[in-house]
Image (cartoon, helix red, strand yellow):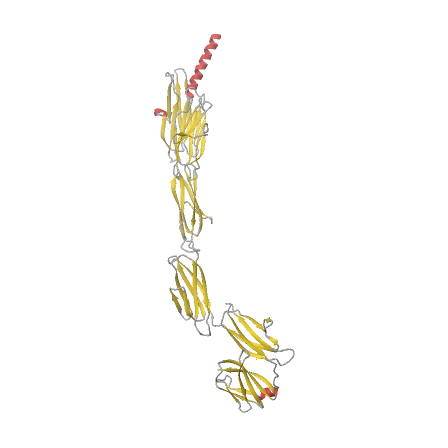
Length: 512
């Protein structure tokens, strides 16, 4: 029994050694991110026992040198068979391998005594921000496992034993691995990996003019990454998206995103600009006197895409071009069109030229009673409405209506919406009105007058003519004659004060 036990122990030990021998195998799987193929490498540790025969087939075909490259039909599961025979015992396993680069896997259908060490390499491309990585999906093998990483053949500090390295810039990398088998200790074959660049840019030309939406933006792939682009998107801030091109775009930012077959992602930004909105200041001057037709307009451009052209238009078919200023304008509404950005864009401004601001005092009611009942009545024309009027008596300023005025000198001030100001000074006197009988007995003619003004009435003593500012412009003694020579007076509205033995009376006089 002791001899039998010893024999069984030896057989079991040999079986264990042989089993260990047979599982000292690397299965290395590398998906192909260009699609349609992959790479399979099966490596056996050194076999000192020449009596052991091994067969490796992949989908029933022998693997020359225990490797197969260019695996086709990416995404379809492939079957690897491994058998070994030492003359006494046959050891085998069968594994289904999926080379899908986005989800590679190993699944044993016939499980070996000890699972071989399988390594699946996955890679993510790097955008310019250096975010590439290499990841090894490891199973089986005899613990502990060994991993070493290299960059251009030089060890990468701090990565020993890691199954992944991240934050990689584009470049050449490598790794070695091994397990703790008696024949597979240390690091085995070097596997080289190139991290490729994935990058893009957004071609975003400006819109033709400020406020337009006529730009076409394109997503341009400048680096394909590994395995090519599998998805892309170009988007604006308004929710419009397209894989590559956006038409009829307004100004604003754009974002492009691309993905390659490794799952790498790169983002790029762009911005659709627009020519500056033309900034300008427009200055005008109104007519200096009624009907003078001497208004002017000047535009000063402080911002805009040169060259600029100017086209003016206005009343009575007025037009001018070529200059930023015009003169000799009559009152009326005008427009100015400024064309810029090489004739692609234009901006239009409108403005008004106003007739000269005029203030005409139509009549003055002198004070005839207590409390004060003087008044002034006037007409405003020209300038830009609305008008602002102020009556100044030298001590206070008041707003209309301008009635209930006491004796004194006043200045009426008018300011239009353009800030132009005119004024007229007049006087309120303390006159006694004629009786109704006296009013009926005095007349003047012709009115309007141009040369001679005739005055009819009983006991008329004198006449005094005031302008609208209350100044005396003419006096006449009517005891000898009933007429007044007004040929030297300028055209306009005047106040005629007739004095008789019965009292005084004010009449409105117009000189042609």
